[in-house]
Length: 400
Figure (spheres, rainbow, N blue to C red):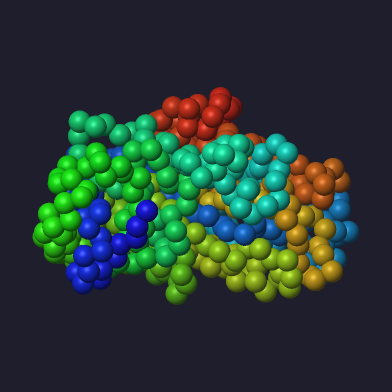
C-alpha cells in the first residue's frame, strides 16, 4: 500500500498505481456534502501508550490509593473534585469545564476480559474488536462500520481521515471503505484497500496510459487540495500551540468546510510512563484537555456541535502500584471520555476499587465493545453485531 503526498503529486510519477482513483475521490469528498449536512460525525482520539487512568480520573478517597501511590499520589486538595470520592487530574481543568457544561461523559473501568498487557496486542484488540491474532492485521471496527455505509450505486468521499503523520491505524481499515491520512491540510497521503483491478481505467500493465492519466489527474488533484485548503473556515477559537490541538483544529476546519467524511482520527503518543511519570503525565493531560476544549468550543461557535461526537481511549490503563522508577507499569482497564452536547454527561460506573485488583490492575466494569455498540448503533445508526463480532449491551451514554 503506497503513500502519496501533494508534493509527489506534482513532482513525480510514482503515484501511478493509484492516480486514476484520486481526483474523483477527493472531488466527492470536498463537494458532495450539501445533501448530507446533518450527517453525524465521530472523532476518535487515541491516547497511545497506555494512559494511567488512576491519576486521570482519580479515586482520591479510595482505600488503597495512598498505599499504592506513595510518590505519585495526587492529594485531595490538588484534584478537581467531581464528587466526594472522584476527581480529575489538576491539568484537566478544561475537561472539568466541559463536564460542568454537560459536554463530557466519563466512563470508568473500560477494558475487556483476560486483558493483554502488550501494547501491540491490546491496541490491536481495541482497534479490530477481535481477539484472534490472525484478524489483527485484517479489518478494523471503524473500517467495517464504514463498509456497512457504502452504497455502490452512489459516489462517496473519504470514509475516514487520520490527521497526523502516523500510519493509518488498523481501526480504519475496511474491505471497501477508503482512508486518507493528512499530516497537514496542505499535505495528502492516500491509503486505500481498493483492488486496482476493480478501478476504472487502463489495464495495470499499460504504464504509458497510467503515466498520462497520472500527470493529468495529479494537477487536478493538487488544484483541488489548494481550493479546499484555502476555503476551509478559519477558527475563531483559540487552540493551544500543541500537536494534538493542531490536528483537532484541522479536523474542525474540514468539518466546517463541508467534508462528508463521517469518521476522523487523531493520535496522541507518549503515555507509556514507566519512569518519572508525573511531569510527562502532566504535560500529556494538559495537551489533551486544552485541545479537546478548544475543539468543542470551535464546533459550538460554528453551530456544528450537535453533529459531532468525540471518543477518547487508550489501549490499557496502568498498574495501581507505582514502581521503583517513579512510574507505573502496564495495567488493565481505564477511563474513556465521550464529548459532545448529545452525551449524558457525568461519571458512568463506580470509582476504581483498589482493594480488589486484576493482577495489579483495576477490574473491568464496561467491556469496550459496549461503548462501540453504543457509538455504532445510537450515533452512527449502524448495526453493531457484525462490526464488533457479537451482541453487547449498550452503555447509556447518549441523549438523542
